[in-house]
Amino acid sequence: MKVVTGIRKDLFLYALILPGFLYFLLFKYVPMWGIVISFQEYSPYLGFWQSPWVGFEHFATLFNNPDFLIIFRNTMVISMMNIVFYFPMPILVALMLNELRLKRFQRVIQSVIYLPHFLSWVIISGITFLLLSQSGGIVNKLLVEFGREPYNFLTNPGIFWQLLTAQSIWKETGWGTIIFLAAMAGIDPQLHEAARIDGAGRLRQIWHVTLPGIRNVIVTLLILRLGSIMDVGFEQVFLMMNSAVTDVADVFETYVYRNGIQQGQFSYSTAVGLFKSVIGLLMVIGANKLAKRYGEEGLY
Amino acid sequence: MKESKLFDVVNVALLALIGLATLFPLYYVFVVSFTDPSEYIAKQGFVLFPEKWSILSYKYILSTDSYLRATGVSAFLATVGTVLSLMVTASLAYGLSRKRLKIRKPLMLMVLFTMLFSPGIIPHYILVRDLHLINNLWSLILPALSSGWYVFLMKSFFDSIPPALEEAAMVDGYNDVGIFFRIILPLSLPAMAAFGLFYAVGYWNTYFNAVLYINDPTKWPLQILLQNILIESSTSSQGSGAAELMNERQLPAQTLKMAAVVVATTPILLIYPMLQKHFAKGVMLGSIKG
Image 1: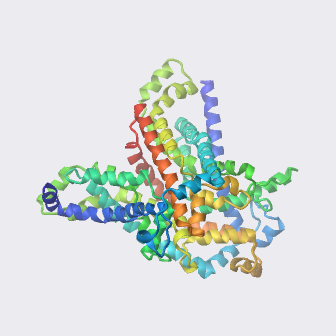
Image 2: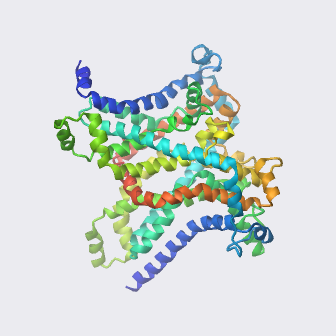
């Protein structure tokens, strides 16, 4: 009853949230119900109600499939390389920007390095091909100019992971500095003053004042990143993938797309997607617990 | 002091290098797209500064129906989609920021959970199919209308609007819908502009949803067409439309591809100064709270 009178009293407030509520219900929660087909032998003609149940058969198929280990490994390696090589970059660049005394130069550099964040992956993969292709790429032209052999960047399984990491660094480093710069702006200038009076040089100030000042932001972001370790940039991998590098490029989403959308194995690929999402959920919950244990705020 | 000077010099030099490394690929794309086709062929693609500028590639791109159509589709997504996204997200976020909303806590949990768990590609695809939205442009707008991330960012913005304001408006006889549209939204215009720009870029860059939901080439958004141009010419498959035309016009594939990239990027470059003014605020609003 209380709820009903509450609704009547705030009728217009409920009217305001209705479209958003319906959106989340229809486009975020109805698909969750679609998960049932991963326990069925789903046929579009029979639908959710009449398709026969098969229990965990699709999961058994997945775990016995040699592809499973490959996509699991690729997902993990791409994510870990991202954490090891990309993650420190925005911190480093933010530290450098923070030390700049030429404010106009700082603004120019910021404008430039934020830009790639807004470019689509289609454009970035296009630029990558232009720069690195073996026949016409400018990088290989330069190599030949200096008397080297042209190098195969794009269809070379040996450097595919490095290529993805390099793209991520180019695209997101600048954008990633914003949150660290904001945290640095919040550090009490008196701390720097005190360090300077004690004779600390610039590097020592960075080490003993600035870095400790943004420590909790770094820890929180790192933990959140660990929580989303199952997510690799899908569009990026999808666009950079080619038949020569499939073994090192295939990740959960590309696998689901190929088996589900292209080959119509809806039930099996839903099971694959569900496995990925459940592991992802467990990782986020674990990461959040970890964050709270270290006294950070966490995600929720 | 000497150490400090050296530090500054090294720091400025390194940052300048980083800036150049960011700009060079973009500069190169730009230069290639404007290079005269015969010069490009003569130099075998090794052009850092063209002797002769040419807009041939652009003339060709802008004269094709497919490009104009795809631009129209993307412009539709970026305008209609952005307005709808802002409306749906902002009104939900505003409601969630009002403490008197009884179902506030469960509703926030409902939104939060969608950020932690997604049922995956296939269930979303089946939903869009069952709604008969395949090959319909609304399939690129409706499923992408809002996200938990934006709802919480906007909510933390609305949290900062004092309740005294709406209480005064209520005394004046406004209801919540009136307050939201007549008072809150006009007050929040700068923030709405920032969120709107983010949404617009997102819609303009729509790619994967279109891969999933749009098979009809006449309804392709720009990014799909662009990707097709990029692939087509690099493998130079015979009989494909773009490749044929390139041969006819004797335009090298690269200059054409890069002109296509520039045309597709220009709208983002045009709104970039506006974006830049707002985005730091937009990002920090929520990220500090975590």
